[in-house]
Image (cartoon, rainbow, N blue to C red):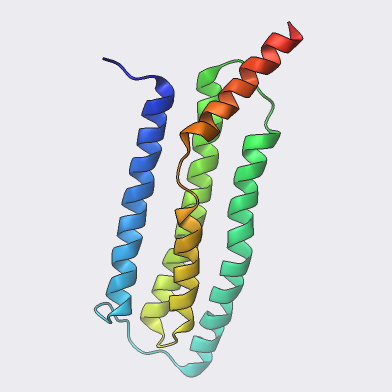
Length: 154
């Protein structure tokens, strides 16, 4: 029995999401327990990395979330389901990988420095990532809105 394209899309996105989450979680645990350690850095460089990490995290979170919202809500609606799925997938991947980049940056900074600030930043980012799971109702609403708009204008 074949599945609708929406279910296949959500399964693909969930697979990306969970693999990404697991890989980042393993890297985080390896740096947390000092399995991965990069050579010590001078204190001046550690301060610069610290400030860049905080700034990147503060800027990266709203950009990732707002860009997803903008791409989903502001794109011109089409009557094609495949185009709606393409819009959703592109917005989802952009949000997922932008947050993943920020998490990876903080994991790398944690491996370089002994500062515990990165652990808290990474935990906050993982909590945010938990709320970014692909959503079947969100995709369905995006496609149904398109259908409703087409029936109203006809």
